[in-house]
Amino acid sequence: MDCELNRVAVLGGGSWATALAKLLLQNCGRIGWYMRSDDKIEEFRKTGHNPSYLTDVAFDTSRIEFSSDINQVAKGADTLVVAMPSPYFLPEFSHLREDISRKNVVSAVKGIVPDKNMIITDYLEQERGVDRSNMLVIGGPCHAEEVALERLSYLTIGCRDVDKARAFSALLASSRMKTIISDDVDGIEYAAVLKNVYAIAAGMVNGMKSGDNFMAMLVSNSIREMRKFVDTIAPMPRDIDLSAYLGDLLVTAYSRFSRNHNFGSMIGKGYSVKVAMMEMNMVAEGYYGTKCMYEINKRPDLRVEMPILDMVHSVLYEGVNVRRAMTSLADTFA
Image (cartoon, rainbow, N blue to C red; front, side, top):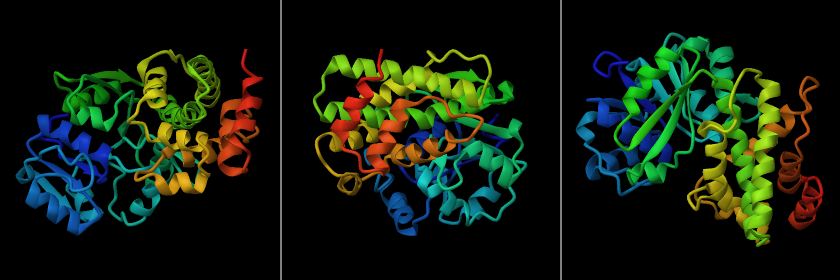
């Protein structure tokens, strides 16, 4: 993809959308950018900074075509980079009337469509008519905050058309951002949802002060559980130890930037789920992902043994005491 020939737009106004916009503007002369708040757009234009997220990152706003009209932004772009928390995905897309079926659509959501229990690419194909060869996903261990700090990072770009994945990756690549190409779109998406669930579990362990030894057992069992599920729902040759799977799990489970880890840590310390949700100033994707993945795994063709997912679901949605749930989980580890 050539930015001069392929018009690129970002949909979303959060930290990940801001980080991706920063990357794109290193290689693109102009981008479109949908943000739902006119007030924030106006403040962004005046200050050159996103007023709510990654506020230290400076932008040349003369190179950004802002709009709070998602249809206007979509109409003016050939490639749409969707970077909004999954709970907001359907409410935002419900306003989208523009036909996007022939556009390239890049999912950077790293979540699942609540209520529909669908990964983003399934939704785009089944309800928006986007061809599978035109859908890309962004995965891998890459916190928005570290991108903003220009720390060395690695992204995996997945697409069934690997040439298209390679072309889009060039729009994000820089000396501090390395890119990896993959054709495992479904595997990357499901892994991105599950790693948030496991990060909540890791946060619980941290909040309970259960120690590094048990944390290591939890994370090692998490990658085994992830592999079993992903290989069942999207069978194809893959190496689960690659950064799009294991790497993303590790950074989300351990990092202080991880919202899911911090959310789980509060629960481990004794906060109720409701209070922990109220204390979070950003969305913990794993809260919603836990329910969706639990329900998906009830399908007759799946029913994968997933004790960690079941434990997190029992705490978040069934009111089970976190210490009792974690003790029961520990007995399943070997």
